[in-house]
Length: 259
Image (cartoon, rainbow, N blue to C red):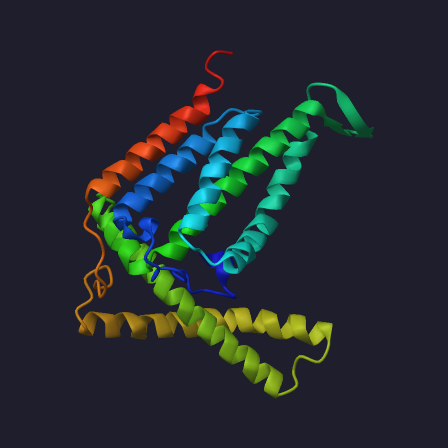
């Protein structure tokens, strides 16, 4: 969630009426978790397995009519952070040495691990972003409760989503105030102003968060926001979707069972 400060509205495409949107929110969460586990638990170098998962995910993206530009922006931000971790997998020892410079060396094993981990991260981020873009936050929170997630954890997630928007608003107000007073004229002043803003932001958001919480309690807050929209309660299509997800996960792994 924190990676999307610039475009914080998560459920951009939640009002669509596709087959994916007609599934119950808890079914979407279960399908997403099954798909992520199938991707992550696939051993390194199983390229055909990830090709099958990738084609299935591409079909689901087209079926859900997701806004591709928003999806690509989110992936760009997320992969920027993950790329630092991925780069470390390139210099793993083992296999044939393709390039070396002092203690650093690139081997066939390192390339295999880098490609495998990159594909795992990319496919997992795609399906997770699909879930958050096509399902409202309120529906996700209530679906987590239906799946027996601890209510305290769900309440923390709900508060985090609500308070981050407060944090963004406070930061933007402080930044505009600094710019209107010509306090951000060079790099040194910008660093100084941002350092002071971070300290002041903590105090201001703490006070504002307390006020928001008291206002929520006065309006009957009980841990999660009330459901204001009508969502599917589940049916035959949900069973079919879960069955197809399990079959797809097993099909991807079955390619290498004979080896």
